[in-house]
Image (cartoon, rainbow, N blue to C red; front, top):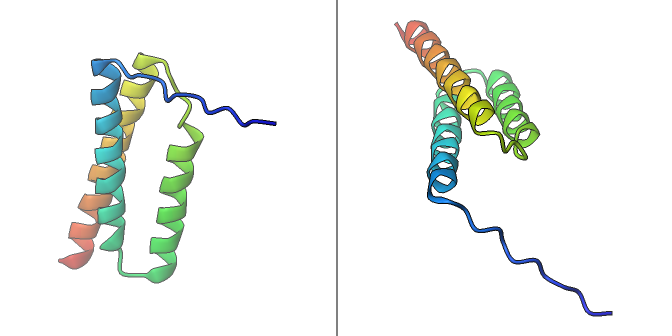
Length: 88
C-alpha cells in the first residue's frame, strides 16, 4: 500500500501574515516566561502557553484568531508588568 502525501495547504497573504503574528506572540511569551524566577512557575507557565496554542491550532475564523491574538498580547503585557514589579 502506497502512502499518499497531502500537499500543504497554500496560505493566502492575510493568513500567512496572521500566522506570523501568532508565531511571534508565542515566541515573545516563551521569552518572557524565561524571566520567571521560580522553576515551578516557569514550567507551569510554559505548559500553559503550549497548551493554549495547541488547543487553538485549528482555529480558522479570522475574527476569532484576531481576538485570541489580542488576548494573548494582553496576557503577555500583564506577565511583563508582573516581572518588572518583582524585580524592583
